[in-house]
Image 1: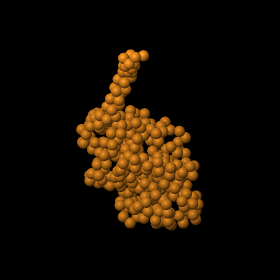
Image 2 (image 1 turned 180 degrees about the vertical axis):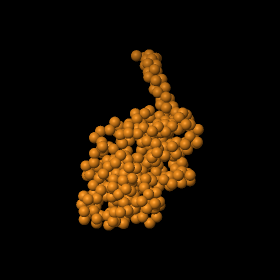
Image 3 (image 1 turned 90 degrees about the vertical axis):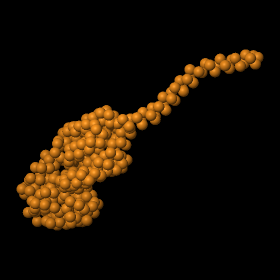
Image 4 (image 1 turned 90 degrees about the horizontal axis):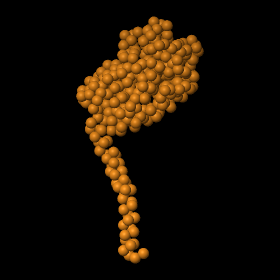
Length: 342
């Protein structure tokens, strides 16, 4: 082969690869576009249509209050309607399942609370995967439980309660809003740490349980601050301690369970916001930033405090770690107590 023929051969060979090179160039251009510009555009345009917040409980409780408070503030800021969609039932699993199956586009959010972390241990199977089907956005608020007793029960402190329960094993009873509820598991944790025997009487909700506690049919219970604060102030119930690690600003002078002789006891009822897994990161980031801003508003803090609840806040990563710790903590309590879903 002479020199001219050699060059001609190489030229023909190179032309054969032009389609491959052209495809590679176009592919790289497309990759660059989809990895950059659309994300920025999504963040700028989001939200461009109504947002739905699913509440897996009936209207009236703090889960619902939280959704409506955040929803109104988001509407005011973003000029897009926020629809609160109450889907109660199944201990929160019905609404949670609906959210898990919703499009991960940033337009469906879910209010989660204590039961969200407990249900994986409480139910033999769930129609969703708590770990894999959701993207945490923010821890929104928390409130402790109060350990309250009927005023006729001859105890005025946690130490006196423990002493009475030990002297009469199985004679005292406590109410809850149902198996796996925060007030049920708070008492089961209390029992395991103190070694006392108190009989569980489950109710279908907190309101009838508190009514029977006031009426003297029940001896004591743990319940959320908003549910019993007014009865304590009115003298209808006696508060013995607060369940959280720190004292509550809502009842000055009331000690924690931990400092009352039960070291390690720490229970808070919390509320947060998640989205379906796969929701675009720009939407998660924008929601987190805006919700944190809302939770810092003076009027929001006051509205929450009026119900005995404190705003929280933080990053999606911090909320993810918090959820993992809560699932591990309550899985052990559920297992040790032999609790089953109702």
